[in-house]
Image 1 (cartoon, rainbow, N blue to C red):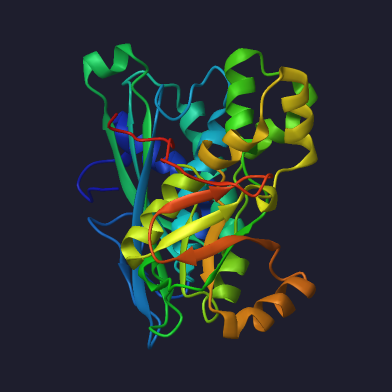
Image 2 (tube, helix red, strand yellow; image 1 turned 180 degrees about the vertical axis):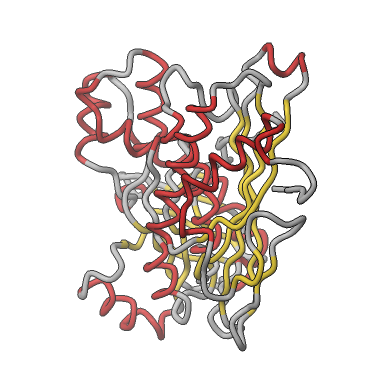
Length: 341
C-alpha cells in the first residue's frame, strides 16, 4: 500500500481508502518480527530463528466464489483470510503475516471496504495473523459490469523443517483420517442460491465461515505422514494427495463423517448426503494419513480433544476406490470443483 511523503494522503481517493484501512486495522499492523508495515513500498519481516517460511495465496472473485446478494462484506473478508489460513494449517504451520490485494469498481462505497477489512481482521486476530500491507486497484470496465470485486490474500506462515507436512508422504498401509464433518459447506451454498432458509443456518454458516484448523495442523505436524486441506472436495483433494505420494486409497463410505444437520437436510430434499461429502468442497477440513506406528499418538490427541478426527480409509498401492455399505468396492472419479472447467 504505497504512500508519498510529498503529497497529502487525503489528496486521492486511493490514499484515503488506505488511511481508512489503517484505522480499521489499528495496532494489528504492528507485530513482533515486523520491521516495516503499511506505508512503505514493501513490508519487511524478520523470520523466526530456525523456521522455514510458508507462502500461499488465494483469491475470492465476485460471482465466481461469492455473491454480495447472500454474503456480507465482513463475511467475504473473513472467508478470504480463512481459506489461506487453511493452507498453512495443512502444512503444520503457524500463519503470521498477510498482504491484501483488492480490485473493485471506482465507485465502490468506502463502507464496504471498511467492512471487508473488519472481516479480514477478525479472522486474522483469531489466527494470530498480522495484516502488514497490500494494494488497491480499479477493476476494468467490462469486469465492473459483472460486479468487479475481488480480494486476494497472500499469507506468510512459519514452520520448522521437521514439522512441515507435505502431500507426498503417504505410504501403503497408512490410515486415512479427516477432521470434522464433510459436505455441509456445499449444502449451505445450495441453500443460499435457492432461498437462504434460516432453518439450516448451520449449513449456511459452514459455507460462509470456515472452521480454522490451526491447532489441529500443529498437533498433527509430527504425526501425519501426508496432509492437505479439503477445498475442492474430498475425492479431488485426496486425488492430489495420492498422486503426489505415488499411492492409491480406499475409502469406507460408512466411515465418512456426515453431520445430523446435513442428513436432516438431505431427508427433506430427497438427496443422498454422501455425494455432498465426497464432492462438495469448501469444507476446509484437514485430510491426512498416519502410519500405523503413530496411531496411538493420534488416538491420544483425539481422546484429549486436541484433534477431532476419524478414520475414513486406508492407503493402498494404486487407484481410488470407495467401499459401500454392502461391502462392495467401486472405482471412483473425482467430481469436485475445477476452476478451469
